[in-house]
Image (cartoon, helix red, strand yellow):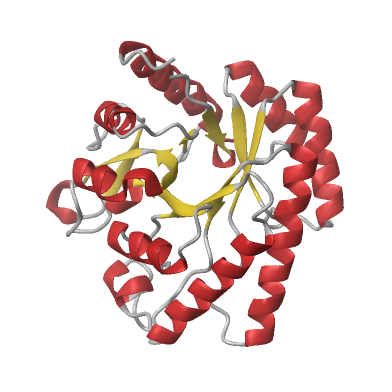
Amino acid sequence: MAYQIIMHVNYCEQGQTVSEICRKAAAWGFDGVEFRRRRSGVEESTEDYLAELEEGVEAAGLKHVLFGYPGPLLVKEDAAERDREVEDAIAFYRHVSERLGVRTVNLLTGALRNPDSSIPYSQYTSHGSFTATEEQWEWQVDGCRRMADGLDDLEIRFGFETHMVYLHDTVDAARQLVERIGRPSIGVNLDYGNMVEFDERPSLEEAVRSLGDRIHYVHLKNSAPLRGGAGRLPTGLGEGEINNRQFVRLLMEIGYDGPICVEAPRPGDREWYAQQDLAYVRALLADLGAC
């Protein structure tokens, strides 16, 4: 099975233009790029952004375009605002599906912070699904159902990224959210690199097997714990605590056939890291007979 290898745009958010990102990713050998739905700190209309992106993709011969953060922000308390978020998401994803052939979306529906502002962001078990109310769960379920139903004529799949401080922060929470939504286009983006931030977490094998065919997308990254429990050090894909070879092997065993995206969580020369991480993924896929 040949997997699409996707570069997360955070390898090239150090001043590179959209056209440079497309050209570099294609030249390095990536099959596609996960872009952000909106670029932070850039004053531009959606149409101007997509026009620049379309031009860059075509010039570079990039095969696949995916989109990630932000998705519809379903944590907003005002129902009318949530309705607008859903309507805007439907319009955007329909547009990019038809215009750019987008088939996979990394779904993040808004950070869910503890109402107690004194609790630090890094205290992950005090935010997200750990403190969410039933009403907040219903907001997400309803909004995602309506979004999925509004796009059910398209070949597009969504994956909730397992990400700290979101309702879909853990494997169990993401699975529960998908099950409650009950739409085949809505699944999980398993980012196990985020799961290692929790002291209590399923093993890699438990995570993959418990989600099974609900996995619509995956992110690969890596890190290593610092001595004394003083945080974690981001590393290359083959250098940290997570055995990404095992991760890919498990995905193959459950019949996963979606894209594999690599991320750049560490600072420094991210363009060089992109090439190193791609070489690692290509090598392990060849070893596993999946290229």
